[in-house]
Length: 113
Length: 121
Image 1 (cartoon, one colour):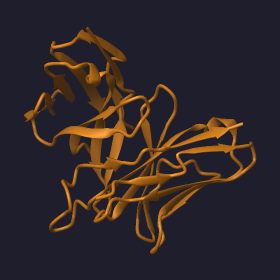
Image 2: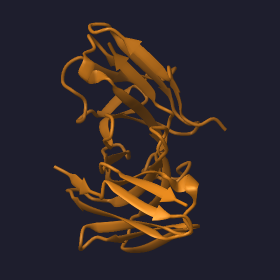
Image 3: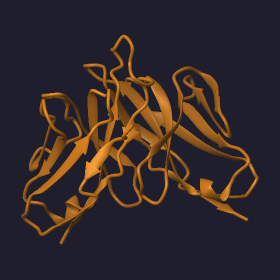
Image 4: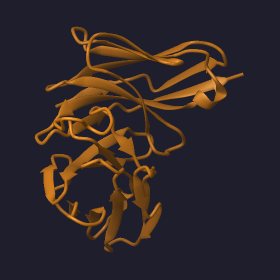
């Protein structure tokens, strides 16, 4: 089976930096994705790590260590609109070339003034 | 440049009725995925389909649930004889093939629709 662990809630102030950790136990691991979800709406893709190291996309960065089964999402220069749920998801390749995402339970980020 | 479309956005059914949820993938995407999300939880994989084929249904309940992606038209997730425990948000996602020589978009990305919120009364 597969399991992912994330903190359930994180609170930070506007302009700060916040890190959301994700540890996983899985078979068939191919990479780690991060998604953002506002108020139960459509999850939107943020970042992906297929290899160890840091990936940077604007204010968001994501890190992966395969040997530690660990990754994190780093959000810089926090804005009020970043208040949302953040999910890590393990990617496995399926027969036929598709991807199966196994999601963590999500981290609710609250950004305060 | 339409994204993934789902309808209806909200669906109310009485116990024992059938629910039909529809999903049209993004243009150029050949893979459709269905996920279920219960309140305060993450998304749970249900099924992965290509046109006219169910590729992986390891997350689908064995009874009452079925999915199809016909040659023409949207993908359909069908829930027969709904029960209160089926109340959830159902999200569809689409993505390109990891095997395509020139995939339309990064092969690891999935694009989600707005979801259908099913309420069983």
